[in-house]
Image (tube, rainbow, N blue to C red; front, side, top):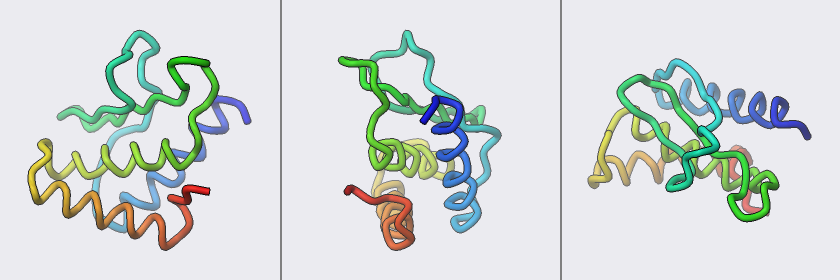
Length: 106
């Protein structure tokens, strides 16, 4: 799978999850390669950024890792911190994604 195909897949799943939870964002992009301190981000600009590659070997991360990061960043669209409301929403999003086999750790 190419980077473009992987990004297209995560964007498709992102749209599906966001629709279910009524979350709005502008785009899902890859995290800048120079950023090495996180796997994803979402700021007030409503752009979600996700690292696709393992920092040590450069290979793509497992898809479930990407979805886990995606769900976390989607929850930040509503709660920009990590308070109890964020944690509750993040768990709900992960459960919903798992129930639909979007978030599958196999």
